[in-house]
Image (cartoon, rainbow, N blue to C red; front, side, top):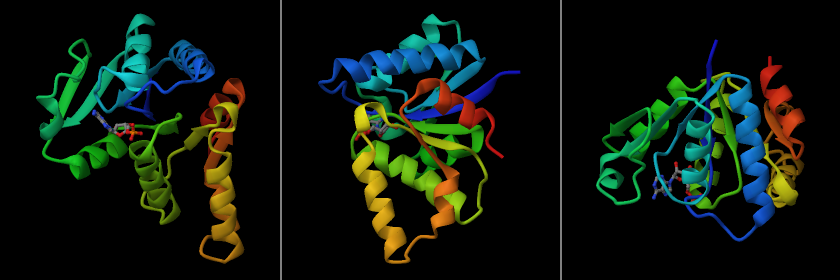
Length: 181
Ligand code: AMP
């Protein structure tokens, strides 16, 4: 049975060939395991790359885009489905509702905002869905350290880290998502 993975990632491509290659590897693995994609609906950067790659592997791709961005020329026009939402808040809500799991690839503040939202919802038990950071080239190392600071000052329970998968190995990352309890 197909599952929906929501991927958060840069609206830009960035400057690392390794990130691009490892992103393609991840998509190929997810597609081989019958995952369909939910994402922000853009056609550029890593966002466009993952959408094109899922489609090339014959998988479904659902874009979720607030009206304000829909008219922009960077909307992907070849998706299985494009859902428009009133605003960014409704968009995130819908992404969370319809997806079975979440992965953050390298990206910027938008990516961080989205995965933190999912982390917070898991932490307060509003949802119970696997979420992962694909830590290509140590991209999320400093963020992991920051979470350690939150724990040190007792603003975050150490047990919260059990909910967040952080892995640099693509097979381990996907296995851990599949086995999440
Ligand atoms: P960033 O990491 O700042 O590049 O933002 C990328 C993330 O925020 C994606 O996962 C999208 O869901 C959302 N986002 C930011 N900019 C756009 C855009 N121009 N089109 C669609 N989604 C965007």
